Image (cartoon, one colour):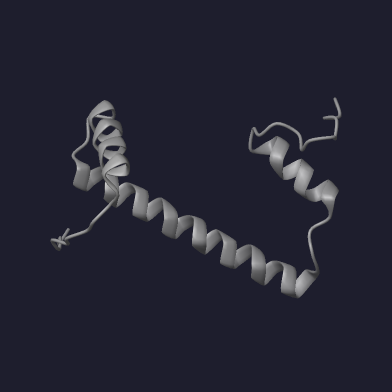
Length: 85
């Protein structure tokens, strides 16, 4: 895979957190940042896909959103109880 060197700047506190997390993950800072950027782009792509779905089929209902939260392993939304099947 071809690589390109980039120069980026971060607030000092964030830079140190990045270094610590990369070190804990056994990664270089460059690999950590590349992984974080790829995850951000995947997230944006998913958001775009969901926006397109809603334009075509209408907004997701609260029930559909709650089911998605549960399936992804997130706690139920505040004020709502998780149904036990």
